[in-house]
Length: 286
Length: 155
Image 1 (cartoon, rainbow over the protein chains, first blue to last red):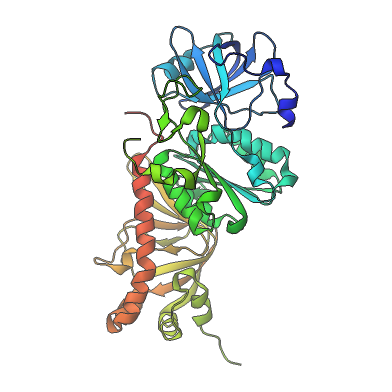
Image 2 (spheres, rainbow over the protein chains, first blue to last red):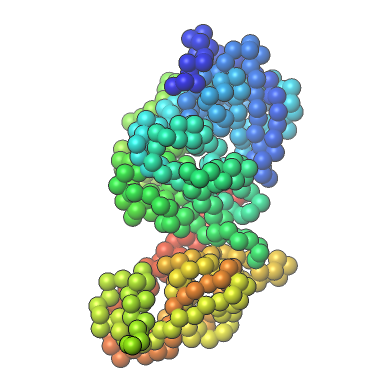
């Protein structure tokens, strides 16, 4: 990948357990409870990653958590994480100001398999903050737009006030080569967009189901519904890629916190081909 | 010149796809073409569910009026989708408003007429139910997922 070529071998992981120091260059309040950190490394070296990978990010004195990368993989000197404040660590992260130094280990995990989609129609299905882990892939697909057939983005939000990366969605929608369908669960009376579930957006997507690769990033409770709707459109499970979340700790498949059946999500995931994990989906203990 | 009936248009509706010709003719006998200007109401909460609508073009917002919030959209429907399920079962009254967000073209079906024909011919009734029940189930499932509110503030 071109972006990786811009990074020297020395920039890649030396010791995966040793954090590199990054300074928060910018904090962007995206929507209520969601913010984006733009990070710059103190050692001025680049940070190569592929779309879909995640980092273990450490806020000193608070804790270390897995965060997916939401920036452009062709900009290795700018590391971007979009974070939803849901727990003790992310709530403290929300209070961090520009200039704060954090530790970053990574990148970890298998990336979205972009090469599998070359020559195919591509559909992205996501909701609310799920757009963050998909954003690097969408951006990369648009960088390489001629390599793909139709590109459709189906995005669902709870309401009109929490549409993440709204400027990006407008920009992508304005392109003549990309279809963007945004749905919200509820809206005020004057709203002129689509109201309802993401399934409705998948239903109207102009894709050739038999030649489509789907990339899904939603809560697991909602993923199954999206996969079922994709199936009705002819996109079978062997062409549906989903991302999952578990309690990653070490990031390199040693500690076992993120074990998911026979795999460790931090190194074998978090991206999986749906048909390969479908049976595990109904195992409650996982 | 022969005047073309609505059978062709009814046949083209996703909701009636695959229905046999005899049933199509019976259903078309209850149908008429309608259009609504933007902000026109197809029906309002509490009114008798005497018509259902198969949208051919435009967008319809389903809304409930909530004290303090005004009208809130909970679903919007476009071409190929059906507006109105409440006509199927007693008390045959709408539980929400249906408003045209933009100019809407639709096939309106006289619900009493269709109910009577379904009652008289249970084969037709079963065929119609098989087409409308999946819509009901689909919307129920979507509502369940909405109620989960998995992306809401942690409780």
